[in-house]
Length: 217
Image (tube, rainbow, N blue to C red; front, top):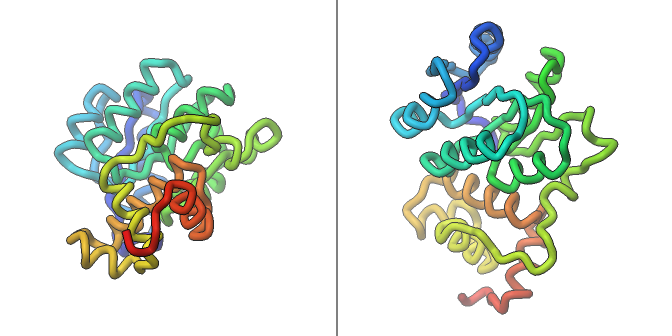
């Protein structure tokens, strides 16, 4: 999914010095506009609901149940938002949980400027990013692989888009049939694939075939 000509980016966290540095850095990225730096993460949910940023960089210390719940609230009020999480936690179970909630990128706190910009570019472009420092213990495949027998947790719109993909529809055709923008179709498809651990159109077709979907559904 290509980055739009100008993306609105919000910065969330509870460390003003770090956020000030991110504000200066991200604000200089071509095609990016920083629209807000809420004073605390507690302001972030309402800010997201009202301002609808396309991207959020969220800086937190560790992945506690409370912080995971916070991520869920952000995604709950803005399901299409692309989240780059900057965190010091290396626990594989917590990182998997964050990706399965719907974040798009995970970067270790203290990463270099170059790595931050690389992660941001991947997320803005609709891809997934995992900090290279975690590759020894994690991979994107293991992060996104669903537990055996797990139930599907797709939204109705995500399911609708996947069914239309199985029916051999292009993103443009799906947008026309659903009344969504092409970017929204791409994002719903991306989020559905991320939840299910699918990485290609072939994976989507096999997923649909396993559930009895046909090109005529």
